[in-house]
Length: 156
Image (cartoon, rainbow, N blue to C red; front, side, top):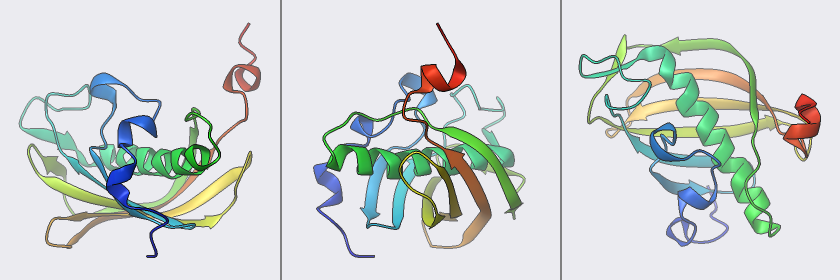
């Protein structure tokens, strides 16, 4: 992965429209024109927590979606624009080797663009690994970033 600029130079908060407990990504590790890698700490005390010390495995899809949102935010940031809301359209072949992600675990999530750009359907190959690099989950995720979310949703 060839980095466009130091990952620490762009705070992840400026790349995501998510705020408060809905922002699950903690930091940007690395990125290039086709791939992004982020880190996050699993927190039971989020709206996704199961109250028993972690989050269900299906929350991995949201981790992947927010990683794609960071990718989008990086593209927009480079163009001098603020982050835009993107939509998770669907996924194929979500596989997870654990039933849950435990509270306090540090995960590394990567998303590699397979197809798309600008205002279009995007397809990413996504992976979640633990700190030791053990693959825990993978999926192909489809997302859409409309140029104007209000117009797209016909909100007036």
